[in-house]
Image (cartoon, rainbow, N blue to C red):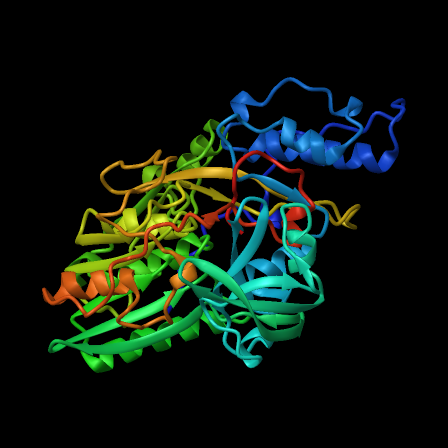
Length: 467
């Protein structure tokens, strides 16, 4: 596949149309703080989507650069953030993290005690090799019962011993199982499960996707292509995309997946996937730029203002597609959903999505030699589909509202998974023999997931951000 250009402003490609201000050597603040504050101020006042609403603060008088960054954010912005480790952030976006490979959701259990239930494990990870599986209940870590005060520190340790429990009649009953895991630097395959299901005479492609990432060497694009090749070879009639635990990622990759799932004429005619809206400075700049080198301003067709469906040799020519969603389904996931909606039947099963119609970029220090290792991840644009649909901050509601209740979770691909079972019923008209989705148990209350160590370096903000 020939990739379309990435719709971001790379840190090395920032235009900085405004002149950078000079440091005020007369300030009482340390030079290191002034350098960071000046970098934050210049960057945000150029690329930030809500640049016009940035408060009039004096960066020379802000003693805490991290707190200063968050003071600049627009009141509706719950997704811009800043970290002090640029290389770790880039690796995370490539799918490389120091991790056990286990993603888990905390629940409050009987008042103040917490438990954690495994959402999934990445193939080939320490957690997978140890036999930990989706739906396993973590009851203790290093012998400690879990609470709001200790959960994050215990769960994200480099080495920890996990004690497990069984789900019995609505309660977590500790058992004798204990597993010690050590986190490693691990390149996580975002396709954690895929299969072609033969059900009621239909061939149905199903895959679980956890991050829109190409990988460091395009290895995860190749893995995604392998899935679509298998679907094509099997002659699938329908596809179910499981995005329950996917926080998003690359918008261009979302467009490529859309072109592979869409009706063939939509792909061949390069129909609009999404339009992009920047701040006024960049909207005007992209309209007047000649990025396609034809000697004329690009106008509204600039590839920085409009993403069209790219060509896909693996196009499945579907007329409908099914997405499994939760409140963690965000960003590029939602662009895939809304971008396809004008052209085919899009069916959502599960829970209302997160609600993020925005794109961000990573900005590190643009000076050479670099003066610091911090990085900002500000929102720089919002997207809308070909029909102008956008601003879904409250999320996208499902067509079929089914709770993803992890204490009774089944393996991916199981006919007893209530969300997948509903998709199969809608495709074939025949429901699998499956118990009705469990209602929230009075002993278990799902709570926002604790942020990962990299994100914890940002200050705490109200609400839950996907990680």
